[in-house]
Image 1 (tube, rainbow, N blue to C red):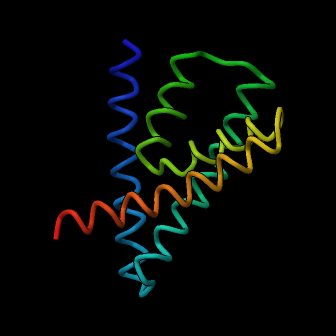
Image 2: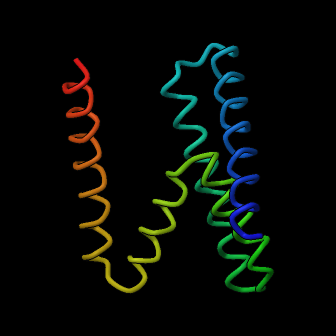
Length: 118
């Protein structure tokens, strides 16, 4: 059942991301600003929901649907943000290394993929 919840939530999140991106573009904003807005909103909602589940508890199925599914489909940056925060709470140095490596290696990977495709 849990994989189905993640699947359905992910599809819903992807549709929400598409709609938010289209709305921003139709309003005259450049695509990078639409992505930035989605990432910021996704991180805000991820923090709110993660905090809620940690302090108030809740169903594992609902958590998987919302955090992994909906927000994972909406923006994987929200998962990155939560992972970085979780690491920071136990080891700020590991969190800094994770953030730096994620940014640098991801940019190198997208550059390599682009170069290989050409």
